[in-house]
View (cartoon, rainbow, N blue to C red):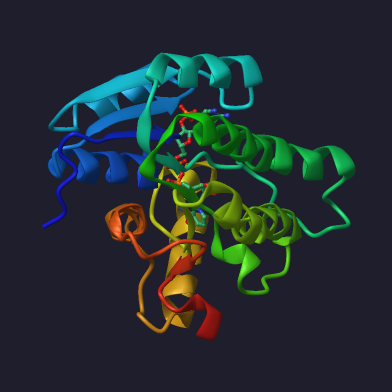
Length: 240
Ligand SMILES: NC(=O)c1ccc[n+]([C@@H]2O[C@H](COP(=O)([O-])OP(=O)(O)OC[C@H]3O[C@@H](n4cnc5c(N)ncnc54)[C@H](OP(=O)(O)O)[C@@H]3O)[C@@H](O)[C@H]2O)c1
């Protein structure tokens, strides 16, 4: 049984999907959790599903001042989990012009970098950071250059940051296709077809759930001998 009593975890992008499932798991283990997102409505709905000590903080993670204010308000932290999504960015390079490509970095890479930098000042000695990245950087898929580059850049920082943050730890969890609101921008019939195709190609024969990725995140948070690691929680997509 994981015991997180007496700990504080911040989840940037914690109102739906993998972030919310992680918040629920942290609260169930007795930890205090602070979740963020842009939509006040989504945060309120999320908080209603978390049985435990939860606070909600509405701000846009791309806003550097708002991010700084959040970390000042929250004070000392045991764990930081990063689950903000990049939104869009799936297109062949010929269609992904510089503005669209930059937006993928603006939506995920830079907010993650900013949050990790703030966390380095407030994380307790046994603390950890978990960056939720993505399998696009681990398995070649046409049209995924933008998100592969973003997630790959985050994972490339693990080595140096492991050394800079020690003894505090930093890990990445790299999900494959997971059934979350991330896919809501895709029309229902297209999403169903995509999930079916992914399930067919994956060694496990199905797409993943946010709860399964949350289990990997909680492992990375709590296993004191794991740092600088990429945990692939992707149904075996790299071998499919
Ligand atoms: N689902 C998948 O198949 C999959 C696959 C590979 C990687 N991933 C990665 O896993 C992570 C979690 O994804 P998910 O599937 O759980 O997505 P999700 O359900 O869409 O959750 C994204 C969360 O981030 C918040 N968010 C998005 N943009 C934000 C911004 N600019 N400022 C503040 N908060 C923001 C959302 O709340 P608001 O919208 O209210 O801001 C929400 O709480 C993402 O980094 C995603 O790239 C997901």
